[in-house]
Amino acid sequence: EQFWQPDFKINYNFASKHQLIGHWGLYDSDLLEWRIANQPELPNYHEFAKVKNQHIGLQEIWTISSTMVNELRGGISRVGRVRVPFLHDKNYARDVFGISGTVGDVDPIGYSVPQIQITGFSTVNPAGPQPRTDGNWMIVDTVSIQKRNHALKFGGDVFRQYMNLIVISAQAGTFQFTGFNTGNAFADFLLGTPFTASRAFPLGPLSMHPNKWTSNWFAQDSWKVRRDLTLDLGVRFEFTRPMDEKWARWSSFDPDLGGGK
Image 1 (cartoon, rainbow, N blue to C red):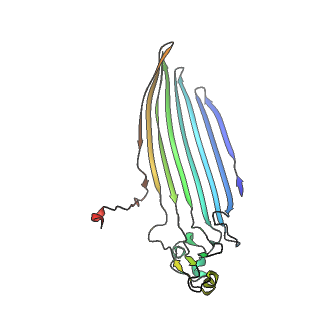
Image 2 (cartoon, rainbow, N blue to C red; image 1 turned 135 degrees about the horizontal axis):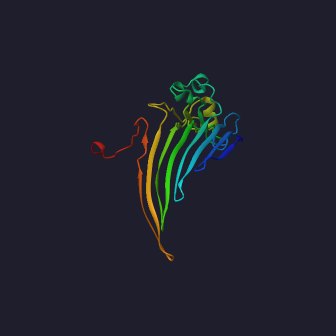
Image 3 (cartoon, rainbow, N blue to C red; image 1 turned 30 degrees about the vertical axis):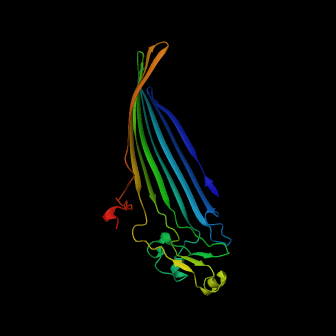
């Protein structure tokens, strides 16, 4: 595994009442995942993976007066996670093994070798491609006011989370050799007579774009009634929308639809 991880931070007072704080970071890694690929004993059957995480944030502190301060913060984070079979430079299922009707016929993301299971031997198990991007952004604003024996604070935040992902299993076909035909699993493999064979062909879009919004607002008062008595009063409102999909492509199984028939 090799990775690169730079981080930067800056503090800048651009006016007597304004302070700006910013940061940026990156994590970029390339690796081969032997365990995820079912610990293959054959070369070139690992999983190639890449992880790239970036984040940036800004904070502005405005001292409005000696008793009032406004703090505005915002940030964006993005994580890219790619996992594809090591052999994905061409459509091996069709061009090498002569297997048509797989994901690779309609999208290069499905380029791979078939999954081969031979009873008593290690499985040639190229896992499905799993490229995905997870990201979010947030804006937060808080006002603090000191008024005699009251410490007031109010504000809110808006948060958005989104994903772009593809998850396919055995996209180049699966063949299971158990010895059902000859009594010897490896002999079945040499003869090309599997016990089961299956293909995964996309019947719709390969990608999904789930997203979610949340919003939170609050107001509070720390009231020092006397030297030995302080009351903390507050109210908070939280709103979270259900998970949605960018193109409204959600679906679920309803056993009661159509009278359950």
